[in-house]
Image (cartoon, rainbow, N blue to C red; front, side, top):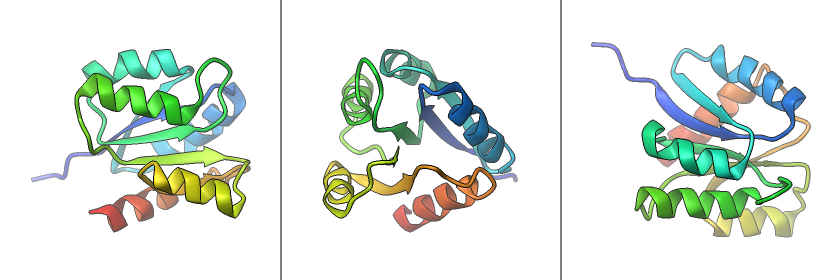
Amino acid sequence: MTEQPLKILYLEDDPSLSELAMIGLSAHPRMDVLHCGSGKEAIAASVSYQPQLCLFDVMLPEMDGPTAFSLVKETLCVEELPVIFMTAKAQQHEVEHYMSLGALGVIRKPFNPLAIGDEVESMWSKHQ
């Protein structure tokens, strides 16, 4: 019996960054990734996709990642949904804030597209 892939809802508005991340994440055999370019799109997609993990950029134009994450949880009627935030703003107090929101971790930008799948898997496995 094969293990089901981890369903990741990925939110990133920058096309070049999302392309790099999708290359790295899609190459990982145990990940099924759905990319969304806006918070509104992620909220709408979450209903049919039913993610097990959110991978959200923090800084977005209309709605920041933490707000989008909160609304995804509300939309799915779940209290617990793991999230990993991606950001260039990763000073200690900022990381602590993201962790206080329930984040499994923070991936700093710029990230290594060849290692992003392993980073996500490592954070996910510590959660399990």
